[in-house]
Length: 213
Image 1 (tube, rainbow, N blue to C red):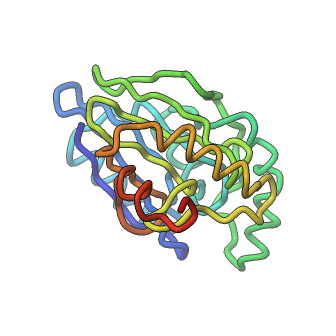
Image 2 (tube, rainbow, N blue to C red):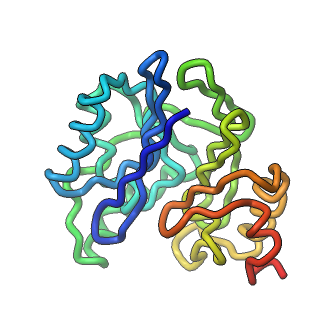
């Protein structure tokens, strides 16, 4: 699986495109493109590589990870996929946008496909396993690719840190437990791609992340 990363919006959120060279299928994880030029960057990448968008995957429904979801869902005819446990955040999104002084580019749309722990989806022939990692939000999901040895963990786990738990639906102890039982059980050399900041590995976070020492 090929992986391309983009940094979008004022929150420097990381959007990932996972793509299979053989089939041309791709998944977009956490579409944070906010400005029109950011949407164009993503559109051009998809067009230039002749990709077919098969999945629009959200790790959670905080606005910085969601800004581009309505546009991309409409443009490529794919549903927003996320956890049902995060649906309540859609109603809170306009309030959050006002709080941050960042107007929404479009109104939120309904989640079109619910994912949960144990689900498996595919890009090309490669499976993507869905893990439930609550604590940063009620419905936080991670997407694990065992063949490629990587996991997309949203804001659950960062290099040397964890996601904040003071937003609606957050729970500090729940997050610590979820990281231990869902992410730290993956192979130590699994590359962890977070929603912000640098990449890391599961083994490195087990050894040195101060929240787990």
